[in-house]
Length: 115
Image (cartoon, rainbow, N blue to C red; front, side, top):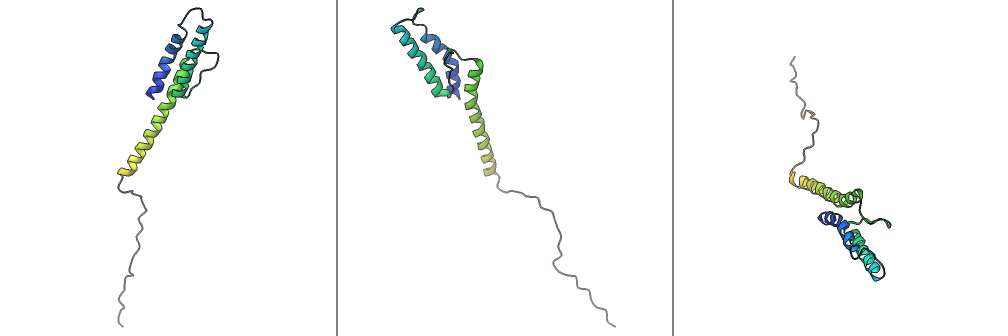
């Protein structure tokens, strides 16, 4: 979760660093610039799983949010599973409400009258 947030924050700075070699990029400098830019995209994909479209150089706020929400949602899902398991472990007894029915066990014996 923290790695994906850091990668999303630093992606635009990484792209700026890749294109800061020279203002007029040509020849070997163009190849180095493209390799650095591709490295930024690859490391961002490996950390977050989000891909940058081919024609775009920078992340939009929606892409940053989508890259960050995946790990956050996984964290909350596992937190819910943990709390549910903790609830099951700490409950020593399970109470199931049942309707009370009275059933007489013996029949009452009525004494016979003597004639």
